[in-house]
Length: 184
Image (cartoon, rainbow, N blue to C red; front, side, top):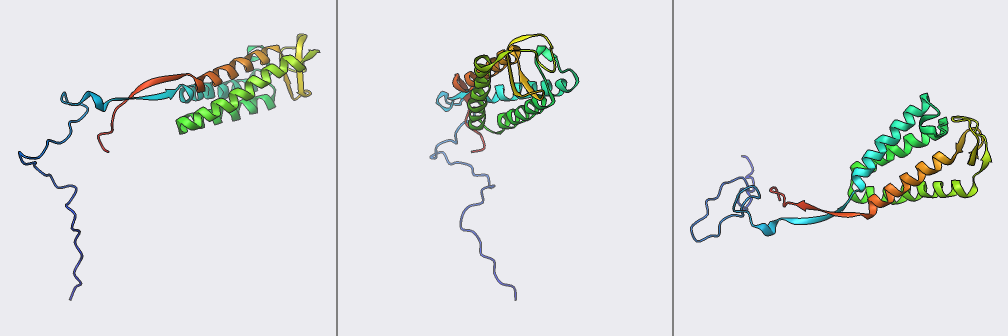
């Protein structure tokens, strides 16, 4: 003899129910002309996700090109500098595709780091001739690791711009229409 299976007392969610004339009509889909305008809300977002992905791809491209051309954009692209660009670009793309909060945190942290590198380069940089890349005399050469990682004036300007763009992307808000999900 087989044991009896317990049956759920709840109605089958896949069953189609035809409402009676006394019951209210089901809510309209957002695609139907009867959709109520109050179902549309505005979500406050930042540009952090888009900026992280775009600048991440750009940083990875510069990192890869730097292995071939050490004087790309008159920046001093050593192997260490290229590896840093590849890592920070990969992290930017990863955080940019992960979530809004992760992208904002990345934009704040790396925007601050790049901005600080740019400012420190102009503060502690001394006149000198770099050992790689553009070999012209530079007024603000900052040798972090001599002959391995050196920043010149052009690097400082690029770092300041990157820092400002990352920080602003996390701060500037915009509103995006958010529609309710038809599946919830």
